Length: 487
Image (cartoon, rainbow, N blue to C red; front, side):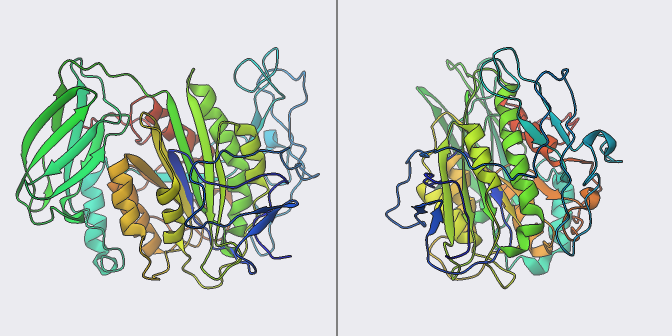
């Protein structure tokens, strides 16, 4: 039997979700280009693969016997679980609190226990009335974020210090035109169509839930234009502005009000996790996968009436068994979380992995809902292979901007400066911060400190939850306590 991802019987994998969580790791493997899921084979990505098939969820895989960290039913609200002892991976540092009760293991810098659970309401359900047992939320990984879209001067300084990487990552983010679309009352307009043209060539995009869209002239068709017309449309409302394109740096924000249009806040979240599952990700993957379910559940219960669809794509390298695996978009958050916990890392071998194939699988097959908040969370620890593919990370950046999809990049231990440069570019182009896992948790090998001003460290689950909830509320993705404005 070949190595690779193993998920419970009866699960068909296919990616879908407007929010894609991109997780990149170096995992190893070998064998056929398809993997089994219990007794049912899981098809690898192919040009003819279904793009929108729903996840056929069987009973979720059983949790490992050692995981007994749920608060007993009947415990008082806010009770803290006592996790079963776990063993640090061979050759890795022991995480803070590992093997101790959660109440005994707060992180010195974060001050929160690493596993907490909510008590179900009467009638069941975590966080809201209606259904099921309390769901444990593992909170162990730590992270910080670099808000490049907000701290533009610091980001341009980073680019100036890392000029040698510009050829490896040909994404010119040095010039920016920021567009802000609001209705007649000043409320942000989500998913408005934006077209920037010089009369002969055009670049298109869609606004995010905060009404913003960032245009980078150096990325393509309008690289040499000096002036352009910005055309905005949504429903029957239209508007237009003439703008001068910067020769360097940024322009003032182009604020466009749509008269006669009333904006409504988004009620849908489509979230896709794109994860590197090669062998080098093993040290952190088990923790990442264990926390993702809690993150999605917390987002779902934070805002009433929000429809959350979540899916995942896993990538390795070209010659690995099953280079691409997918979990189809689903609204069943609990089943999705259970299947994520069953994912294992293998394959890879050298440092770069086929990130471009993972991105292609997401953007060529995902069909986003027209009025949703769309996010892809990319988690990785290695740069992309340069295979000369028809669709690579440069194409992914342009398509994401055109479709109004945020790429939320998360770097794992072992990442180098090239990974940071690429991830920060992908985040910048889609108006999204760069997130990095940190040494504070004690999990994994060393984490490269970002070439950026010092940032606050917090629990990874809290950080990701906060960013997603903030975006759903039309407030964008910013550092905690941010008081700035897109305008």
